[in-house]
Image (cartoon, rainbow, N blue to C red):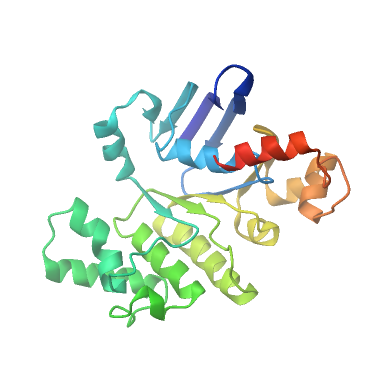
Amino acid sequence: MIQIKNLYKSFGEGDKKIVVLEDFHAQFERGKITSIIGGSGSGKSTILKLLIGAYKADAGQILIDGEDITQMDNEGLNEVRKKFGIMFQSGALFNSLTVEENVALPLREHTDLNDSTIRIMVKMKLEMVGLRGAEHLKPAQLSGGMIKRIALARAIALDPKIVFYDEPSAGLDPISIGVIDKLIIGLSRKMWITSIVVTHEIPSAMRISDKIIMLFKGKIIANGSPEELQKSTDPRVVQFIQGDPDGPIPFSKSQVDYGEELKEMKF
């Protein structure tokens, strides 16, 4: 569904130039769940922004359903964007709108459906995430887990081929994380959605993923099934998965290291 070839992305110029991704290759299979993991500043967020067209690659190709988005203008990108939905880390719901209005927004923006049809479709999407009946609530009345589920209902409003998840489990309790994991798996299987999940939650990634890609300083250091990553002998992979403060990924940093990491975290 998605192929990335020879991708290169940097920020800044001259002595201040920072290479965030270099010679990056990956593919995301149709109907499968791929998680992207790695520490802060490893390039996860940059990959996500490149995939949705928020950033332009310096070199390389990003083929989404056979179309190279690196060569597209805004009009072409907007057509491709109709093929995917995005579940943002914070939920990104509009506080002034009800749940129904938030979920209906993509349908009102991108279709010519009448109001009654849109309301029926919103109810269907809310049913899929277990929140039918919450249509008239405002985001301030929702729990963190409910906000994530409403955001997911909005992400699938247009029946996308692809859904991008930006830290879907961030800030949730273990039960709510389990609910989100179950929804991601269920939607992938029932709707044949290609799912790309950027996450720090290793247990969650191990549960839901068909494949996991681990990044370190802009390069892929592991790419395989959860079982393959758990058997990895790469000390960086082992340290990250086990959450060990001691290892090749340093806990203590110099002032220069902190400066570079802060620059990268902006991406």
